[in-house]
Image (cartoon, rainbow, N blue to C red; front, top):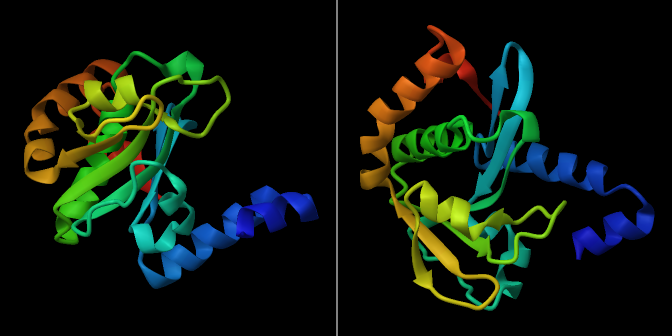
Length: 175
């Protein structure tokens, strides 16, 4: 596996950078970064399951054919609780709707171990995902994009409160 090779070679960051570059060239934007006062505050990475071959190793695989996989999401601790995570998911939903994708799926983590790259299942549920395949550790969750678009007003109100007059388009930058 490419991850194992990267760890053996001692540079998983380089492997991730190569994956992002390749995915950008072949498929397009595969992530979003949110900034607060010009400082990065959080990010998400996403791609079709074809670009994430290790996704088939999860016990609740495979990701549905009409969905894109949300691989990871992270908000820096000093920015949590302010709606930035919801705003990132809204940005992904907006991007994927333009590409005629019907849903976002993710493998949630019910244990939420510190430092892991998995998205906590409770976070996914709090931003509108529904469990489509339960599991004691890694449930598969799904967000239908038609329902995600109704968040726009909530996101804009949260942004106004957090960032002044900045709009979601100005705060989110594609990766």
